[in-house]
Amino acid sequence: MELAVIGREDLTVHIEWNQGEIISWTPGKFDEDDRWIVLNSELAAWQRAADGVEEGGKRVMAGELTFVKGPMTAAIENAGALNNFLRSGGRVPTEWAV
Image (cartoon, rainbow, N blue to C red; front, side):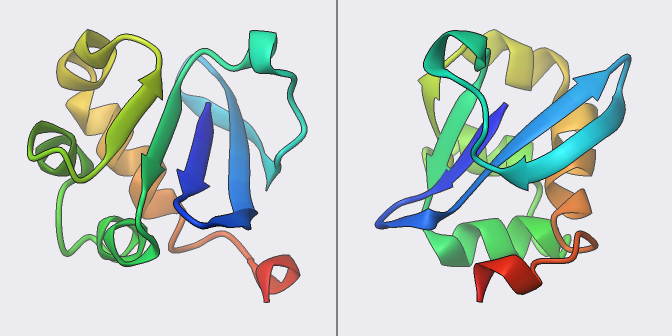
């Protein structure tokens, strides 16, 4: 999965998971064909989701988090997992992004 910040390619991250467990959370490393889901948003929206201020699923429904690739139904059906992934962003070291 790719989480991209509009206008900030340097902040794009790729998340790899297996059965709901995050295996890697890194700057972009996967080829286009290997990315099942791609979400774009403004930095402030990602920060609110990572801080748990706003649920990611609600931001998808409001159009603030935009699906560029992948089934929107996956986000709706797995809203809890999506929120957990996004909240994980608030706990991942990001010194590389400064």
